[in-house]
Length: 166
Image (cartoon, rainbow, N blue to C red; front, side):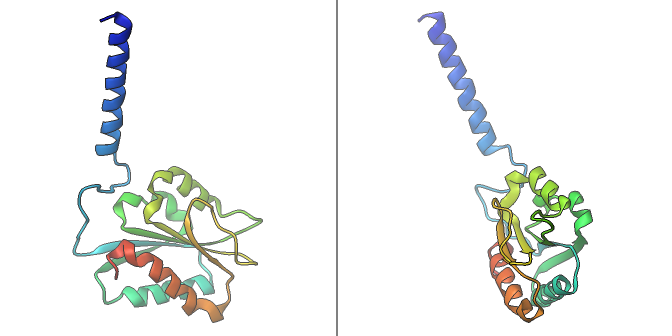
C-alpha cells in the first residue's frame, strides 16, 4: 500500500475518532444523550429586566411552581453573565427591546452559550410585540397588564417540558 493511501486512511480514522469524541464526550451544556435527568428538584433561573409588567409575570410563574419540585432563582439581567446553562434545567429571560436591539447582557449571554439554547426561553417585549432573537425559542408581546395571565400561561406551557412537565 502506498504512503499516500496510508496517510489518507490514518487521517480519516483520526477525523472519525475526533467526531466520535465530540459527539459522545464533549458536552459543554450538560445534556445527556443516554439518560433522562430525574432529580428531586428542578432548577429554573429567571433573569428579569424588571418592570411592573415583567415582575407580575415572574410572580405568576413563581406562584405556579410554588407547590412543585422546582427551585426558582430570580436574578437581574445584569447578573446574567454569571449564569451557567448546564447548572439549570431551564432559563427564562425577560427583557424589552430598545432601538430594535435586545439588551447587551442578553446578546452576550446568547453568544457565549449558543450551543446551549435548548433550555433557554425568552420573553421579549416591544412596542409592536413582535421582536425576538431568531435563534431562540421566544414568546413576544407588548407590556399590557391585561395580558399578563395569558403570557404567564404561554411561558409555563413552554417551560413545562424542560421541568419534567410540571
